[in-house]
Image (cartoon, rainbow, N blue to C red; front, side, top):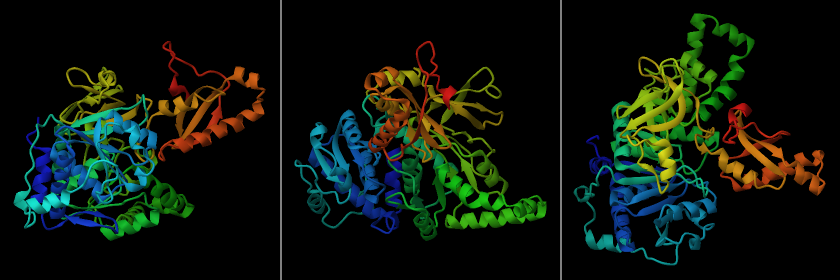
Length: 543
């Protein structure tokens, strides 16, 4: 177990960087590290007055926001457990997560709270606003400002920041990979697993105190939470959060304004730049000729590199891609022109990092080398040549799934090895190459997890559907549906009407699903899907 401590990282950073900017909403409110320390102290008084004890769960839901980040910091530094909820979950999913996690407090954006029902979250003591910390529910009170003035009449000083340091094995975060009842997996991340990720990033990723960061990733998701928020905060960076998914012009302006020193992205953005901006140019006959001339090719690559760098503010040291596979053609092009990017590999269950190499050491088509707090092995007779399941063990690995020992037992062995569900090989230098997914989970283009079984469970309840599977084609989700011929016959529904009915199902389903899960089309299959002896559909045959 590592000696570094999660809470100590945050406490030390607040003290050391007291007078410099810490957290800002883009074109909105901004807090110095001293102001973050003051708000954390006030929220600790609020928790105490509300009856929250160490180990209690506190749910948190809103779009990216400086206040969200402050509440997050206040929760685990108090000794409570943070339950971050993705803001695009439907009300029913939010009710379920708050209840399943045994949360006693909920902090919600006002715009989300108006669609929630506290009667469906029966374990809650109180609900407060992320927007302004005011009470939203009918019970409870908020007198944290009065208590603060009483206890600190002359204001808060850096030396007053002193948090209790919990045991490293204590639970810090429950991160839900899904909201739907029956599919809930609350990943239990300890203080140690988060500290291990922060420690590695501090030792291997290029950031310093005062560096600007633009947080585009969803910080309720563990990738954005650790690398766009906790890691840079631990160093004293100034983190500016985009409070909503921006249009490309807004994003370009934000990069120009902030000029971040390190950029973390899902591959989708880089792929769009390649597909929409670069491919139309490099496919022109004259450009093909120019790129075939060695001297001219290098000059053209240098020019393109400079223009793309300018899109991201021009001051970054590295772009780190993660959360989904990167298009092979795009990766080759960016590699050839020496664009400073690299590809990491991780999963929520490892908080999240498994492997990474800096852009100068990155091997094409790989996702870097295992971090120094993990062992990695391939479940095959020859890990260099024969693809097998990637397995990991070490400080980063979760405790298990909250209140779900059966699901935990399927992926986590008694001696600590986590089955990732991903297939790959490791070369002799230790670079990991992912060859496929062993699980049915689909990584959407935004980097968020998509679980086909959940969507299929809704589709299969429809009157005319016998069975269905969800597949990904060219980055889009397609529903393959087998019609129930007996029911069609009983209702006098003809083949020519079936497509229309299935399209109606698709439209209605999309209204129920989170925004990052959209069914783009449907196809009719006239024979039942091929199955294993266990009656599981052989999904690989339909991709």
